[in-house]
Length: 203
Image 1 (cartoon, rainbow, N blue to C red):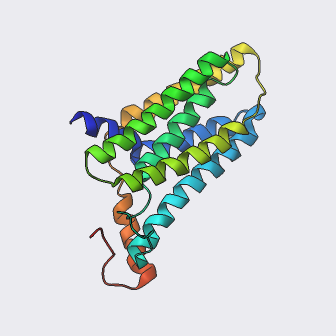
Image 2 (cartoon, rainbow, N blue to C red):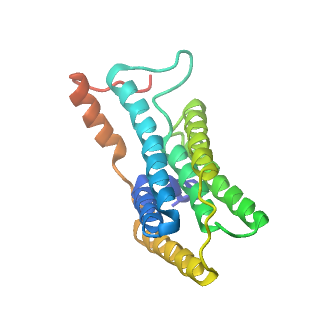
């Protein structure tokens, strides 16, 4: 596996969908952060939904902004920036501001690296990566800005944080490097909804 393939694996839905679900479950199970859990579900659905819709519109009916190389938002970029930025914000909840900002910056940097890997691997055009990145930044900012400031007792917060981290590590050990067939699923849906014999592709 090349370096770029190793980086791009951090943006694959095979890894990120279970992490998204685990992040939601951990927050929904904690009474002080239950609202954040639902907020996280809304953020993930909004980001993933926009990416899927952009791809479906292109594949089914060739809907695309004029004048740019485009087949839909980069899903790897969008979900990686959203998930790893939000994950850092959730894990560092209640910590000193410097640690929190540093962790969020590191999470966002991992997402940006995934976007760069999509360009290096020639999977996406710059416009697709930029649009996916812009979408995720908006959604991540909305989620983080609305997070609850409630912080339980230190021992409970530490136990919760370890649970979140441990579960995410376990998911990573099982799912990292796997490839989710999202493109094939979207192609099948595009053919079904459009009634065409084949999908539109990059020229």
